Each structure stands twice: as structure tokens, then as C-alpha cells.
Image (cartoon, rainbow, N blue to C red; front, side, top):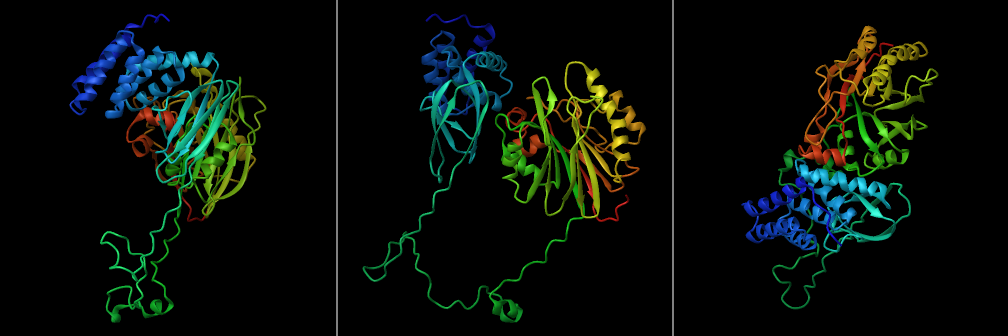
Length: 498
């Protein structure tokens, strides 16, 4: 089969990969030789030879540019699912590979119009290896991955050290996205064999001794008797430190979680951050089932989810408000009645009580598009909406949280500011992200200080890229979200000022 002409940018990338493999002082000499030979083979159109060489080099010294080479070789061989997987893997670690980025866009465009479907594997533990057709046996994928698979039935295995192996299959018979959750069970720990002291000279010096010491246990500490708590010794208990006093603040967070429920999402990392808060207001929730999966990582948490998805033109999403059940109580929740059709995605209201502080949260995901006009109109419509909501309620403490798709400097905020509303994060740091860094301040959390005096003046963006992704924006963008959360702190000690 003749090989199609290769764009110049890809040729440059191939040669750069070869040069990189040859000059890296960290890689062994054989790795450098294999990478150089692979780059030359790919540039000469010998894609199958290049693929084998790139794999060999990557096994010896796994580096991002070598995975780029594997992906490019697969593209030349028209193995689109493999090309997509390895190019994505490369760009997650090294987002500045411009040629690989263009190749990934080409591959994705062909997958979207062909007999393929996206299949997301959510795998725990993250170090587990996934092997699935049509990937070769020497092409394992690790952790949660977002793949494209051709129509048909695909058998797969997932294994990890210390866990039971899982075998399954996935059937792809339409272009619809699928999500599979695989959680491996830990293998039962094997107990060491008992030692028989009745024969021979006893165990070897390196054999484990599992027989219990039959001597009476007199003290569990070397502390002199006169300093010991005799009462706790007699009861067979240890003295516990005093209980931590109840926290007198509520920490409220808002976060657009980038289509929670579609594609790959590191739920464990999301939960790790949410666990530092008391209330989490989420946008872009694609299904209630996704919230239930997230709650599995947050024992003791509950959620109020908007009863129906909101949106237009084939796209709709839910809102969700998660809260600690031992610190926060749900009072009410409802979707706003938008009779004038002012919002593409109608806001969702959740009322809560944290000790003496009761409050209502209005969350919204403002429409996005090339034109700012529709976005401005929705932000401007929030002022009259909040007037109506507050007139119909005895509650005076209201928090407005969400992804507004407008920066703090935009003029559309004037109607809200004229009514006394203010953004809690006074610096308005950028919150949306690209593969290279933070971009726009679109996510906000607003209160009216005339009514909500419980605000402690503490609020800011949480730099989740540094906290969860070790500063790797591209990886965070693919596995967590394209927005950073914003949070604020409120006093719960009372008395409530309603």
C-alpha cells in the first residue's frame, strides 16, 4: 500500500525525536541508538520498523518523546486507536510537542467519523496495567485511560501487584461513549508457616518466627510505675488525647469538573481536594451516576443533584452540591423556574445549614460561545433573579457560585454590584486552564456583605494543578478538569443574622 505524503511539520518532529534520543545524556547508549534509528526509519517511510525501535527505546528509557514516536508510527500504519492512545500519553507529559499535537487532532478527526467509539476505563489502583485488543501484548496501558476502540467485541485484562487479576470484555456497536469502572481486589495476605521447635535445631536465622511469646506481659511501656495511669492499665486501655473541638467555620467551594461522568476522570484526586471542604458546588455534571461514583471516595458525604439535566441543542448537564453530612444539613433544593427563558442552563438552588449558619447557594453555568453578548445577558439577568428569590424566602444569606464564562472586569457585572453583590476572591485570579497554564477568571463565588456577615474575608482560587498534578497543566486538563476551584470560608458560630 503506498504511503501518503507526510506533512513537513511531522517530518521535522520525527527528526527531532531522533536527535533527542541520540543526545540525551540520561538515556543508555542502546536507547539513544534505537531512538535515532527509529526516527530515521519513520522519516524514510519504514513505519513498522520505526514502531519496533521506538517501543524498544521506550522500554529501556520511558520518555515522552519516545511515546510520541510510537504514536506517529501507529498513525502511519493507520492504527488509529493506538496512535490516539500513545500521542495522548506523550502530550500529557510533554505538551509542547507541536507536531504530535497536530497529529493527535488529525487522528481524532478520523476516529470521530469512522466506526469507532470512545471508551473510558476508570481503573483502581492507578498503577494497574490494562491490556486490550487491538493493542499489542507489548503495549500495556496504565491506570485510567480514555481510548477509542473499533466496532466489535474486545477482551481485556487488568492486573496489578498484590491484586487479583480482572478479565472482561467490552462490546462496541455504536458511536456512543462508554465508561467502565474496574476496581481490583487485593489478594489475601499469606500467613507465615508456624515454626516447630520440637524437631531439629530450630529454624534458620532468616526464617520468620510466628510462635507467640508465652511470657506474661507485665508492662506495655518502660515508664516507671509512679508515672503511669493505673486506671487505664487496669482496664486494659490506653489514654486517648482529648477530642478535637468542633470546627466553627464552613468552607464552601465551587468547581466546574469538566463533564463529570464522560471520559477519564481521576475521581480519587478530585475527592482528595473536596475532602478539605465542607460544601462543594459542582457544574458540568453529566449524570447522577457520576456523582455517586465520586461519593464512593468521600465517606460521610451526601449530595443534592438537580433533578433534570438543563441545556439546549443536544447538550445538557446537571448541577450537584456535595456536603459533609456530619457538619452540614440539607434544607431544600430546586431548579429555578425560568419563565422568561433568560438562561440556557437554568440555575439550581440548594439551601443548607452548618451549625448556626443557614444559607442558600445559587449555582449556574453561563452559556459559552464566540460572542460575549449571550454570556453578558445571562450574568445581567442574575440581579433580577436574585431579587425574586430573596423576596420569596425568609433566608437572607445567599451565595452565588459557578462558571460564569466572564471575567471580573466585564461590564455585565454592574447590575449585581449595584445591588451590593461582590466577589469573595478579590484578586479574581484566572481559573480556566489550557495545557500551558491558567487563562481566564471565569469561576466566581459571590456574596452580599450587607446580608452575609458570616463571611470571614477568606477566599481564593485553589491551585489544584500544583496540589494534585505536580504542576503539569496538560495532565490535569486531561485527567481532572479545565477549571480550578474557588473557595470561601464562613463562620458558623452564630448567632445567625437572618
